[in-house]
Image (cartoon, rainbow, N blue to C red; front, side):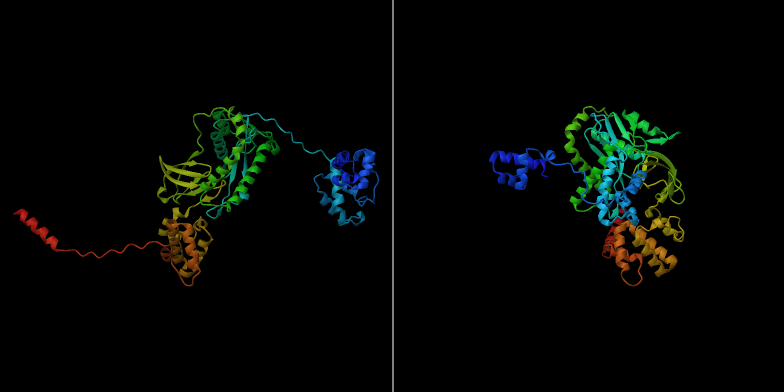
Length: 492
């Protein structure tokens, strides 16, 4: 049987040339086949005879009833899994060469007798109506900052009508990250849409009696301030947020492509990475300007003030030079011991104030438990009390990397417990002054050499300038004699 396209070309070529051989050649069919169709003047579908008989024995005749029973009981079973299960039973007569036939039979059964599939209904969107917000994990991008993997998420927003999007880096699916993401979208747009759609995460909602969820008071305050109406999807129905779910995939695919063009995934700072993301998003939004203009024309005006993107807390610095903020322990400079401080808790950092004076900025710990100890805050006090190092509760935080841990063991083995601890604390002090990575390189170099060594040797190895040599001072006493003589003459 020839195709409908071949039949049509055969008819046109024969009407033009009246040559059977040339017409068949140009239509790509055999001359005898061409003659058959030209004589019949019927298309392939009408000329062909219905085929309702088998040309070979059915190899699935024994196994198919059992296969149908399995598929009806568990519709999510894959065809290959069912085939492998039935092939293990000799009475079914299945061979490996029957797999493709079995898969085609299962596909036909699903289409004719299987359960109904979920249908996605395309929605008609209005400009300026809906902004969808969601979080997406970005670990698959494998971005590094100063050689260390950057674990992060994106709080991602997209307008449903124009597909305009914006995203900000965050650490968790928290209310603070949602507020930062929302305000970033509003500021970029220069206005506020009528609705904001989120999922049922704890950032926006909380569970109440009966399995229902209600909006958090903090989130309702944000809605009132900006004048938008909050809406959420049904519990366990992520498909209802299909626009932003699709945008999440496209965002990470676009970032991945630009990282490949860049040639590497290393960034000197997180700020440099944030700038890279802004550039990629700005380029993506350039193709959406026409429909975006329709949206912007219908957005509500921004309020005159922007909400604070932090939560203010109070804490007291204990004798261990630490404070507790939301069940997480943070170290601070030891000069703050005993002080009551005010803490501004942002999505990615903490700002510590004594009165109105900013006295410390700390990276925020992920999660709601644990400790964030900076060895720079405690190395000075430990040098005065080296005996406290061995059983220090947060001692593991005093090894900035594996190299430092190996260096500690090496120094203790060479100089004994107390001497090794003192030498290691001197290494940490040097790392606080010159940088962790700089000292780590010098540690690797020195430990590769034989013999005992001390922390003082690393100072010279890191290229610290020696103090300048001064010429010896030789006083010239004759000038003092002249000074004394002048004072005597003045008296007389």
